[in-house]
Length: 258
Ligand SMILES: Nc1ncnc2c1ncn2[C@@H]1O[C@H](COP(=O)(O)OP(=O)(O)OP(=O)(O)O)[C@@H](O)[C@H]1O
Ligand SMILES: [Mg+2]
Image 1 (cartoon, helix red, strand yellow):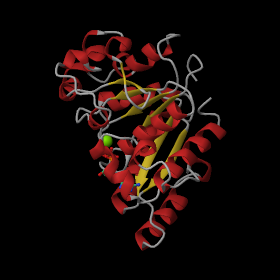
Image 2 (cartoon, rainbow, N blue to C red; image 1 turned 180 degrees about the vertical axis):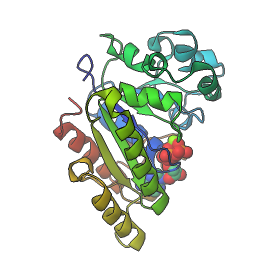
Image 3 (cartoon, rainbow, N blue to C red; image 1 turned 120 degrees about the horizontal axis):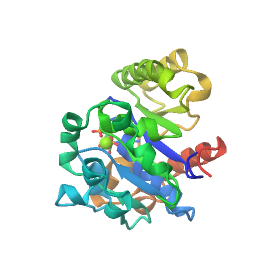
Image 4 (tube, helix red, strand yellow; image 1 turned 45 degrees about the vertical axis):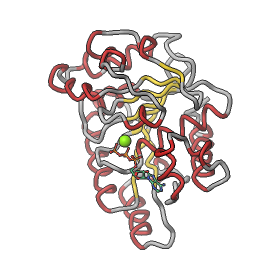
């Protein structure tokens, strides 16, 4: 952990697997327990920022300013209704892949900043776009644990296995095995596909790196972003809230969240 604050990156290069849903509700779960977590939106689509009601008009008011001209993260941070400090995204983030390059200095920018004591006020959760871009690499290099959502379908599992290979290739740079947790999302016990993905994960991945928590298919989780609400505000007594609380318990139990 850097400066005592956990950094969790949520990534899978497959799109639509529940990355943003997981970041949103993990942040909200942490905030509800009395901490002031930081959310960093590195996806040019800015879905997380939207749900939090943050829509910076100028790229310079987003995390773009941090990458493009080294502005302190605190300069673009804003507090949300969920009690989360958010560094919002902007469409211009998509330009950074062409301008920044992928050298060690560029991919460790976020890590360098978050390593400075006093940068954040609590655990950090980073949302990524579904491509291994310079921004996602910044998230991977900055994190203490990588959470990889795998939705209950074949392509999401394949994305996870591709990522596993990419992480293996990066290991000489990390000089250790990067802590990671695969998280099954949109799980439906009645569906054969869900059972097949459970089986496929068990076959191809390390058992201790698969979350015991499964995020079940849940309509409230799907509809809450439309109301700009996290699951604890939208349906506090439902299964979605229970599942994301369980995920936080599991990550805390493993020592990833203090
Ligand atoms: N457990 C769930 N039950 C039902 N719907 C879900 C669940 N998790 C996510 N969804 C829905 O699935 C869709 C994709 O989820 P989400 O946006 O979190 O994925 P993502 O990985 O961030 O996508 P992208 O790669 O585009 O950033 C959304 O419509 C979301 O509401
Ligand atoms: Mg997303």
